[in-house]
Structures are given as structure tokens and as C-alpha cells.
View 1 (tube, one colour):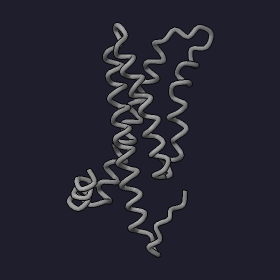
View 2 (view 1 turned 60 degrees about the vertical axis):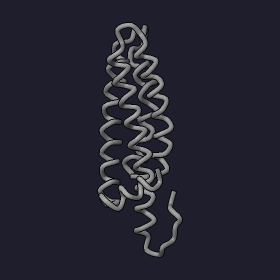
View 3 (view 1 turned 90 degrees about the horizontal axis):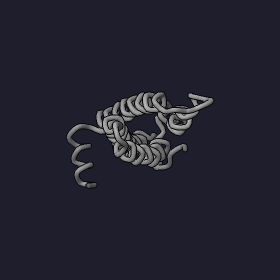
Length: 140
């Protein structure tokens, strides 16, 4: 895997790969948020219809500062959290009449995981290569 990633970096360039991974993160996050809101609107919530929506999207919204700030460590944690949405999508897909919504949620969660992990790797390497003193430490 390491050789494959290094060959990809040599072929496409680190800056281009970082930007592609960022677009995948932002796009899959947007799709996942839309799917979560759409799924939350279809739930019977009783007194407060916004509660299921807020509970489902809040963990993703908390990562917006890391995404906007382009911090690799935040993207690693986002990748771990995205696996919860993948698992939730798989479970929702098993419900009668919810196969499409659950399948799309699982795919977007998996895309978010992949994009976040690639972004964290490529951005970390980019920061190390562009550090003026060659220092391998990073502000976190």
C-alpha cells in the first residue's frame, strides 16, 4: 500500500492529490449531511421534529473547523467518525423501504472515510515538505 501511494504521489504530484482528496471530503460530507437531513425529516419525532436531525448531523458539524482549517489530525478523527455513519447506513438499508437511503448513506460514509484518510496522509506529507526548516513537527 505504501509503495502504491508513493507511486501515485510521484505520478500525480502531492498538491494535486491533496486537492482531490479535499474535494472528495467536502463533496461526500455535503451529500451525507443532505441524506441525514432527508432521513431525519422522514422520522416520526413527536414533540420536537428537529431533534433526530440535530442528533444525526451534530457530530459532522463539529468537524467543520478542522475541514475549513485543513488540519490533517481533524481529518483523521473525521475518518473514524465517518465509519459510524457507514455502519448506520448499512443498518438503515436493512429496514423495509429504506434500502436506497441506507445504501446512499453507507456509500457517502465510506467516501468520507476514504477522502479523509487520503487527505490526512497527503496534507501531512505536504506540510513536512513545505516546512522552511525541514522540521517534521506540525502545529496541532
